[in-house]
Image (cartoon, rainbow, N blue to C red):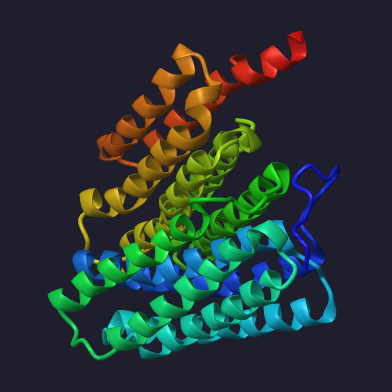
Length: 380
């Protein structure tokens, strides 16, 4: 299990990594559905808090596997079996998400999470046997991850309430501190193109939830004749918005955002907000559909914000970590300004309309003004 060459040409995501991502499709879908139900009933604080906690487990487990794979993926039988164990843990976590939302019971999600993380400990210990100069880093990873899992088990003893949320935040901060602890002296190698491709693939997963919401609007329109026009409109607008978010995300050259360890941390950690916001956007669309069909009594203003706030977070997040350093002054003005303007969506009577117009406008600007880095490369 020797470290992979970070300069290996034509490195792409393996079929095992794509297979691994499928279980996260399930987990993200369930988390998004539970957020939709909470928001639709007006339970904003509890819904958003539960979603943030559950999505942390989804994101962090995926991200840890991804960064390990870019450094030590051997694709032999033992590596594959260990990966399958992690996939089983994701499914257990996903099965416990409804209970975490409805009852505040995180027992099943934590157990599923611990299964994934213990398998990750085994991977790091195996890698340490042939890591050479990286042996101390791999062992610090194994020790750090194992120690935090003890804290997650103890977390289950804390009753639901403010103390539980505080404990979660503290343990989560310790968890995300493990890579800093493990790699502060010597960094494990990562393949910039491979790692950013993996992030792009997960972005497609979370944006796919919004396409499902668009399809649900069409399905509901077939049954709700009185709301036929608005439902068809929101289905079309959702597709436009989702396509625009895809365009914006993949506009900059992402591999240039992780040229140093510090930049890679910023890129990886900020993606928590990018991923969570993209999945929450689909929940917001479902809430808008409920309002249109009379299944939710939320005001139009509140329903609109369940859509626009995630979009604003998505735009600011991707601008901060990837677009900002590859754009000129015009783009660096338009994207953050667009993130603010989408919050004015309730101004128009048809949901998502203003948001769609603003995002299409951003895309037009990006088309007219390509990444600065790419222009420099072309000139060179």
